[in-house]
Image 1 (cartoon, rainbow, N blue to C red):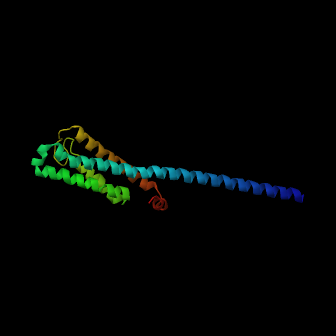
Image 2 (tube, rainbow, N blue to C red):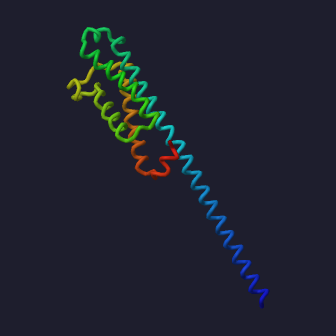
Image 3 (cartoon, one colour):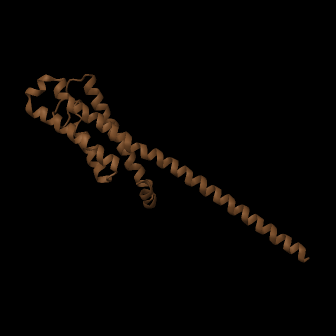
Amino acid sequence: MKEKQQHKKSERGIEEVQEYNMSENNNIRQRHQERSSFRNYQYLFIAAAVATAIAGIVHLYMPLAHPRMLGNIPMATFFLGSGIAQIFWILPMIKRWGRIWYYVGIAGNVGVITRFPSNPVTGRGGDVDAVDMTCELAQVAYIAITAVILAKERSIKVVDKEQLR
């Protein structure tokens, strides 16, 4: 009788150990999946920085690509200022300065998208060539990627955010 009780106790102990091991394995798998999704999340910052860099370089190039623009000082200043700001915006994205910076970056890029009709900057759509489309697509990419970053940051726990930095 005592042997049966001891056997049952040892069976229960084995079952508990197996359950514990299964739960640990599940926890390890879950942590691994979270880490891999964090890695993908980290690449979004790089992609946003590259997108804003492309738009900034194109904005700096615009006065040179359109020589008539150099005669229009306000327009040339607008493009040069936009380009400098977008090049600067690489820093907040790579360094992950936070949500306010991301929102300001989105607003700034929306403000300088000038190739669609009735835009708030010029009131009309401008001429479009390959250089212009490259810039517009880079700005749209920055806005989309940064919006994804903002959405993902809402779903990540504070403890995990510190791990990402």
